[in-house]
Length: 175
Image (cartoon, rainbow, N blue to C red):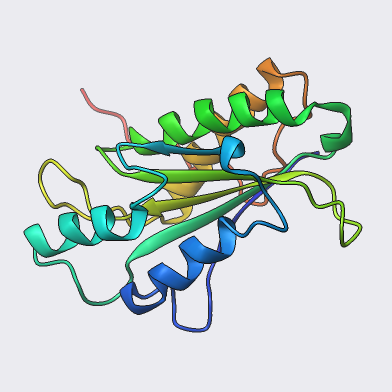
């Protein structure tokens, strides 16, 4: 099974660590410029563009972004180019998940440290059209994993392991 996790750094993914996290996923020893893609944001000016949205809506404090990592179980069976195209599809899905968000995606080779290929996503949690925040809870994270799992399977990869049970359906009858 593939894995999709929501990572948190020691700052709780605060706005103050956004630049550092963008630099981390863009580092030259793990990816190439040709394996970076931005949805509603430039790969060259990601931090400034994300901060512009945050300042426009007064969202410069607290949690500032979602760092998502997708690691396919059979990641070595997919080319970097196809991994990149899948990353674009997932980034577009994340960018339109419950709103309009900026997302940067990078393919990491994983070869230097024995890891397999994987994807990193940095998603601004401030909606660029209305300033609403996207804070992923158990239900929305489950939905996000289901959508990304469908995309992964279209590329011949294993579905994403779900650590959570599907959200309970309401047993309340309405007459």
